[in-house]
Length: 142
Image 1 (spheres, helix red, strand yellow):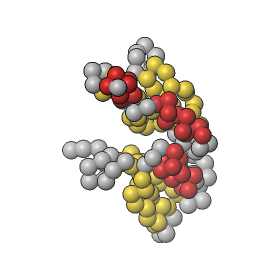
Image 2 (image 1 turned 135 degrees about the horizontal axis):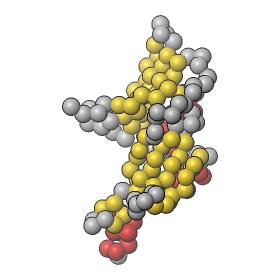
Image 3 (image 1 turned 30 degrees about the vertical axis):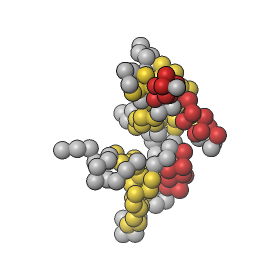
């Protein structure tokens, strides 16, 4: 067994695709309209669905608002340089709702951004080579 995808409902498909593809660097893997059901599905991710988990963006035609509720938490994405990633997102008009820094009660460096629908996406700086970030490991190698 493996995780295939996570589905989220979006109020504007084009804005959501811009966020996930342009700001977060995912690729639009496939998109299909379902006229009989009046909805469109778009699948985005960092690799082919055959070996990567992806996000399914569901756009219900004519629905412009959803209640977020309090059960859903966030989507998490690992990044090499969290500060550079957040700077790039802000430069392109994206919303960083929690600036990069250590998580509460821990040392992992995280940040949060919000997509156009208000969904939270946690960015987690990935560590390599003996708990150093990729940036620290590259500096130590030079």
